[in-house]
Amino acid sequence: MDIKVVENVKTVEADILVINMFEGGKTSSDLVNKYAIEEDDFKGKFGETYLLQTYGKEIYRKVLVLGLGKKEEFNSNKLRVAVAKAVKKAKQMAAKKVAFALEGIDFDYSEQFTMGALIADYSFDKYKTDGIKDGVKEVFVQADSEVVKKAETVAAAMKFARNLSNEPAQFATPSELAEIACDLGLETKIYDREECEKMGMGAFLAVGRGSVQEPKFIHIKYAVDNPKKRIAIIGKGICFDSGGLDLKPASSMLTMKDDMSGAAAVLGIMSVLRELHPQVEVHGIIAACENMPGCKAYKPGDILTAKNGKTIEVDNTDAEGRLTLADALCYACELGVDEVIDLATLTGACMVALGTQASGIMGNDEELIKKLIDTANRSGERFWELPMWEEYFDSLKSDIADMKNTGSRWGGASTAGVFLKKFVKDVKWVHIDIAGTAFLEKPQKEFIAGGTGAGVRTMLKYILEA
Ligand code: BES
Ligand code: MN
Ligand code: ZN
Picture 1 (cartoon, rainbow, N blue to C red):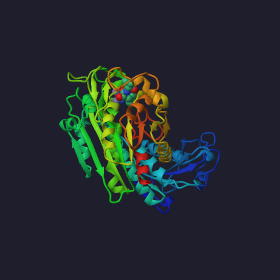
Picture 2 (picture 1 turned 90 degrees about the vertical axis):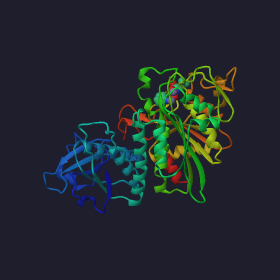
Picture 3 (picture 1 turned 135 degrees about the horizontal axis):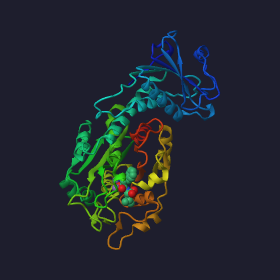
Picture 4 (picture 1 turned 30 degrees about the horizontal axis):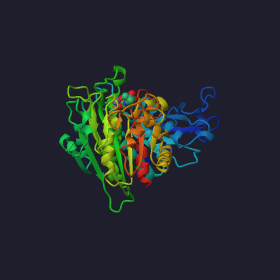
């Protein structure tokens, strides 16, 4: 879909002209008066639409009135969702050209308009052999073209990540992720099993042992002269999480191709950095492997030694993400960056706590946490802080090693957080648990079911605002 910025949207010969209406209010568009809305049918409630026929009297064939809800409750996040609804509606109607004549909105909607239209335009139908619906081809709008252009790039990064999350595990293997990383045109280093062994990554390698797929440790670097700061973004890269020997029940395994959504986000982010050229050095790090119960699989009771020398008693092989992240965090901390941020589909507990509406956030630097929460709010995501008190470590104490990988069932997201903290040294660090937000089982707001690209919008905004 192309977003076309035009001077006067009403002169575009579109299949549909979209105009907006606030709840109980009027639209200043004379079209509504001309073709009259039945008030009983349409009051401008948020996300509602009403179709007017123009009977060939206008250059656009139909007018879609888009309800924006109460004016005093309206904001740029609502705008994005409303635009997405209109685009989905237009797609259903098989419209190719859609013009948006937005009126009475008293903020610059250029960014969130673009995000809403492009997020809604997304589909994953490469494996469908029939009945593929073409989307809307062109969207016309009066907006700030520079802002639109940047948002288009961010939406492309999200699409990149969503495609990877949606890709079945049979194709999106650790080796495939490594290849994709190498094709980004950035400085990239892939470490194979042997090299990871030499680096002492005993926790990461243990997780990957039960699979026939080779583990790959991926390090991508975007460099600039005189960077304002240096950051590392780690993405959990479990290409499939069967649970390992502590096998998941069938229903819980169903979506576990998505357990590399953190990695997908990292690849999506890295894929657009050259285009956005922020003055920030960015390292993308992924410890990619599968968690499978093959005959070489790691076992409950095993003791693993992570890169920093700490020992971990395996309590549950399904708590594999934190083991891979442990080594990735050690690696990232050795890069001498200013900040380390990890994105991980880490705990079902985070999903229980926050549902699919917000990612959990915790870390060792309150200021950085607050900044990321604020950036998320402005980018269209939600991050919610969860505690990471040291007391959560009590249940991770082991009789024979430095720690266990799981403890009490309660407060599981926070327990995972304090576990990760043991592998962070001398750096500002934030952990973002995207277990609930990275992959939707049913459509929500601007998204269809499936991968959402969680973390991409926020991290790119954060990097660009540095
Ligand atoms: N990948 C899962 C977490 C997850 C669950 C992500 C649901 C998305 C949706 C993770 O590896 C896992 O299995 N966590 C366990 C931890 C437990 C064994 C302590 C969990 O949450 O049940
Ligand atoms: Mn697991
Ligand atoms: Zn997992």
